[in-house]
Image (tube, rainbow, N blue to C red; front, side, top):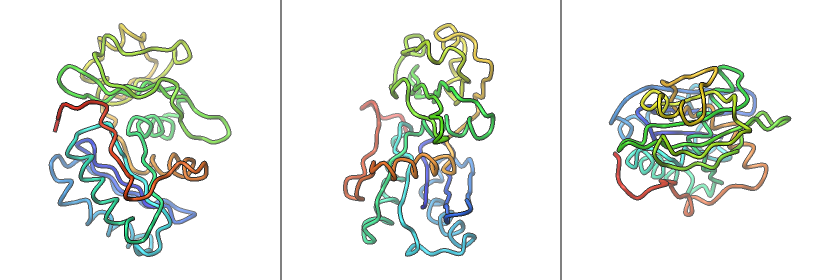
Length: 222
């Protein structure tokens, strides 16, 4: 399975060959269109694979920067369409939560990405025991940091993502002080792999033709 993400300043690609994960992650604002395909080629070469070996493609379908989401959608459709591969869209907020579990071992997460215009992309996630994947407890949304939805089930959740760097005071007043805050975290394709494999086993996939971005709002933010 190949996974890719381009919805923030970071561009990332990862492939799972059945045993190992090979990945690339780099912060490269406004270079995604030029660098995405070369990164895919690098990862496939390192894994000893070619595109014809892929069994599925996963991608960060948003929320995030409109331009980045569209770039990712175009690349995914280009790879998956002719090969009729299943496509799995992964929430970038879920990927943030999964990354926090991988790096810090946290089991509950408030994911927040700076959505600009005084808003955050926001979602609450908890670890699904036995599956080792983060699942939504508070659905992804966009809104004023001072008015984001909350849940008692996530009272001790970590705060992960650039939204916490941009709006930490407002979010803390809303949900309390997290024991852990990582305001520099960005979605990483490697963390989309376990989420996508879990979704694929559950039959939650689409064709390349039906792969659609999730913007959460209509106003363009880059």
